[in-house]
Image 1 (spheres, rainbow, N blue to C red):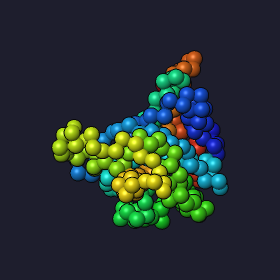
Image 2: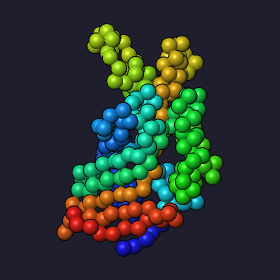
Image 3: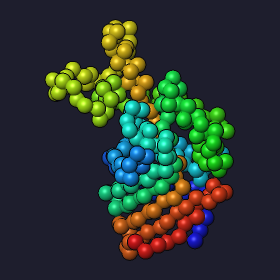
Image 4: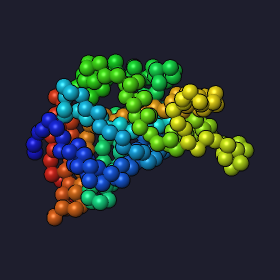
Length: 240
């Protein structure tokens, strides 16, 4: 058993993505408080955010539409698990942690993020970033601007998962691309941009435990990591 500040599982993910940029799709499972059924969906990993004062506390960052059901699920129960298979390197990560959804401060649901930030455990990435004065709104806009024009357009459609009124003919009217408005932009272009940016939210996961399997090794390896109360990571080898 060993203890470390920068977790080896984070280094493994960083190296795998650096060499295989297509391996950014992970599966996120959350709990619906109204049913005993877990809900899982694919997410794109965007980046790590790590407090400068606490290198052992990396946050996984993804994005979502604030109107999706996962928002209320995570607000009601922030415990989630990520399953991530990197095919090219034959590595699997199962990451258990606490999630938060971060919309624009103008959205009424932002208060839940502020509440969770104020009540975060003292030794956590969210608490450390809060002490450092991290600007979440700046980060939200920064990641939105990095999105492709086609992807940006997805955030100005009707509520995801809602009934498709008007069928495919209505869907053909939705914007296909969304560019940042300029001097020659129409009022509709500006409205679509503001709508998309308003619906766009960050989804962060603060890991507390990681199950890391290396099937590309000889022999196969499996390691369990867990975060201590001091904010460091301990690990032990387990049977694959």
